[in-house]
Image (cartoon, rainbow, N blue to C red; front, side, top):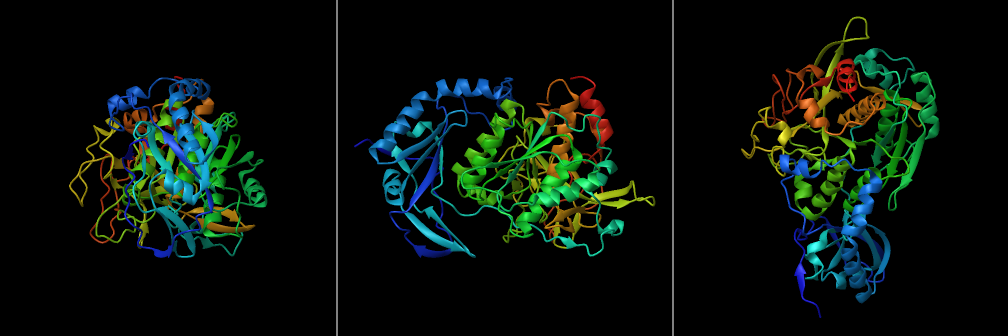
Length: 525
């Protein structure tokens, strides 16, 4: 029998959730093996060397051709491994560096030398492996991670919306997303024509009636929406649940900012595998070809650190976005600097903390007397909720943040990747008025900022001859692109950060000056 070795990063602590015992050994599940090339040099994510290695301009087709050759040997080894253990190879996608295997829990546990147990968290049942994974020594160097043996949900809670009883509420009752875009000067002649904005949806669903009602307030037809099912994901509208509100917010904000763009929504589940597969699906999609991806979910880095393989797989998918010139925006979180983790420490959100992602923080705006301009803008903080932000415990300071004096973590003293990069309105006061289940509500949170910035990127790309590629470098090089947010904080008790001049760990570089950004990035393409 071939010598087995433990896969790096596959150890995980036993869950503290309610143990239910062993699942049925005959239950069939599907997992993903995610590949890496052991001959490729390893660079610190976000370093100059790392971005240089990702800087080749490649199309999706070119990258797929290259990887089919690069990973042919790995695919052969995985297929032989599967055959020996009675597992089915259900899909080989070397562009995504992923091979799907399926089989019974008993066969999968034996194949990976581990034990699989069931647990319950709230009303959700899930299974996970309680021992590290072991594979043949010849196969191990090719495996980045194995996902699907753990199905625990990985998604932070959304904030409840404010209902609107009157159809024409006062300004404090919310602004239509199109009006919010106008406040920031976000508009372009093409209106996003020819672009596709991808939206990652781990939960919830939407009604087409809600989009039609939103279109009435945009003043034009709502963008075309393409639904993409990833793994077991599908449009699961639940009658206006918090998850439904998340999906509505994403679609209606992105659609209002770039009304001529196409929207592609990738329905998945909130497991580690589901989240990674949805990002891979969007980044590598040759049918809809999105140029920007919006991710409005996220959880504390602390949760991802408990299983490094999952973090590495998802961050590898985000690195692919750099190679392919796809910009990814992600919410910085809505629970202040502690991220609602009860350990008296500060924690930033992942994937917003990835150096490959444009992390999006939140502000609170006050309107001018005319109701059509921003009189003031401060850090979003309302009671025990407000913008996330801080210093990463997992990623070092990326090359593009070297000149902005990212502070050390107030908890650990570590200097790391600063979150967020940018910001925009996220407060529920003067929040985003949207339709959910044919009713108006006001939503907020950094979950609105990610699709707002994604829409802005789509507008810029539509005006250019070539799409944006190294957006971080360009944004950090020009302070005139932003309204600096210098007042407020994201502290939970004493833990957190203050706003101030320049980049800060509450609002990043600041809120967009839309006209300047569009002029700056479309003047030379």
